[in-house]
Image (cartoon, rainbow, N blue to C red; front, top):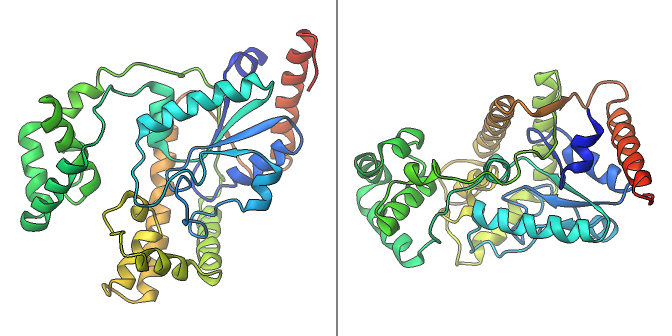
Length: 323
């Protein structure tokens, strides 16, 4: 990779499918270079979602700076636009300290918004969302999806009839602005398309699936179900809250609601995790600027680290400093 690409960039992106080892690589790098980690994960922003998100523990976060973790209560919503604003503020602050912002995670909606820009959309309206939810409870989400198809055919074509969160947001934008969401999204402004980005992806997909199965079983052994039960017992959360739509949480919540047994919840959560990894890989393959790394290749991490270090140290020396 060209030194200019890394040095001139405001930050470095390390992404990839869930379970590929991104967090471990990021921490290892932060222990050797002046790196601060910015999470690009839509579930890690929530307090109380710990086991099922593989959230870094307090001791690790005390040793290695992490940002955009535990910033919201699960009852709150967090948009891609808010992520971009928070991320840009953090990048500037980290760079002002002479350190390296490393964006780590696999929420592709967030990455897409940061790298390619985001439409100027209205903030959410709690009253309007409650109204849409009430209609959905009476009429069903497929009926509201049909309404969306008449207001915004482009958005409806991309959104599944059983995807309540996205149907709700698309209708909300239509009602608030009088314009289709798809039209507003085409007017987005690029923000940081030049950020160098690396994707970890095991060449052996079967190995990735084995990792995902092992990780989910470990989460359940460490109390994942009890964590979800505790969230449910709060009494103010429902399956419609964005926090509870995260993979694994959604399936265990449905189990606690009596929709199916624990074994089936386990199977459904694993299937959903594999589907998530597949979607992440599909999105990343479409991004030609992404540079791929097989984390299982011999010396993969050391080669990546040494190349980054050589270029960053060389650039810093030219500026009269050192890392």
